[in-house]
Amino acid sequence: MTLDTYDATRSARRSADEQWSQRRDIERQLHDGPALRIAALTLRLGLLAQKARSDAGDLPRDIAELQDQLHLIQQELRAVADRIYPPLLQEAGLGAALRELAGSASMRVDADGGRFDTAVEGVAYFAVLGVLAALPPTTRTVDVVIRRDAEGLALDLGNVDTCQIDAVRDRVQWVGGVAAVFGGLIGTIKVRIPCE
Amino acid sequence: MRVAVADDGALFRDGLVMLLDAAGHEVVGCAADGDALVELLATEPADVAVLDIRMPPEPDGGLVTAERLRADHPGLGLLFLSHYAEAHYLIRVLHIGTDSIGYRLKEKVGSVEVLSDTLTRIRDGEIVIEPVLAQRLVEQPSSSRRDALVALSERETEVLRLMSEGRSNAGIASVLFVAAKSVEKHIASIFTKLGLPSDTAEHHRRVLAVLTFLRSQEGSG
Image (cartoon, rainbow over all chains, first blue to last red; front, side, top):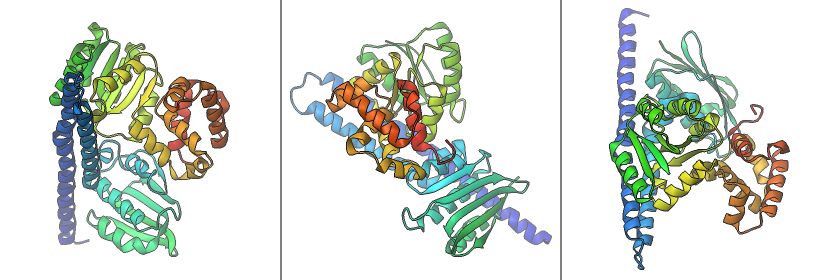
């Protein structure tokens, strides 16, 4: 590698780090701002319901209905936060965040709990999500293995549609990663992303 | 009931104190982080401590603080509140303890009745799990457990969901308007169909066994 390409790689990685840190911060802002206000608002409505408990009309029912609506808004906000940077990814890492998906996707996750940079965890998480989304629902169980080796992140996606390799490569190249296919149409995609 | 509150969001903390007051509970003190809560409870006895999961010390100060509190005050009930109901945190909560403990969504404890019911159950030694999360675990178990759940009848699935909320036999019976005896029969049948050992009949161990089953992957217990 010449000095020029080395600098270009470093610069691309710095810009990726910055963008993923921003995404993580936006999620935190949603948590500390709107989500907090919505939760506090449901408590205020609860107080209002307590004051209105002698009301013989529809008021207590209307208040409970408003609280239900706020719960739905909170769930929608959560879904948005997940698409920006899942809170669990930030707090507990790639293995925990992917395991949380195991209910809605057919996937077995084997992770040793090691942590990686914000950008690497973000890129890897959304790369796995892309591969899962491309599979017809509940056709087969994807095997995800996450390890930390001397170079950085080693991520193996077994029993997947290997046509997804280009999409995976596009994502991981952003942080200097590489991806390769092993096996046939249904096989393993191996991803390696360098980390400090 | 004597309640201590720790949450780094002042807006939520203040609202919770007002609602606890309105429900007739005594708030023994408030803290904005886990360390301050530990300090507070060293001098102020309480029945239940309410903890935000995602507060300082970062990233999940509520959980590390609760581990210290369980060691210092084994009789203290713990209620974890969060904006998000995650199976990951539920399992961590249950590893802190399976009695006098609860995990609920912040926006779901916003009424005097629900808040008091949750706190009372925790003070009385029960586990209280956010129904939204219990339902999600039963409807969307880990992929290797789906086949086992298909074998359950509709009524058994309903009993499993209520068990996952931490409800006792009597609690399940009153929700379903059936006799406690028939709940016991359903539970025995669920345990057989899921292949869980029948010696986990004791309530707290049973909740843990069921939730661990729903979350776990084949071969990893």
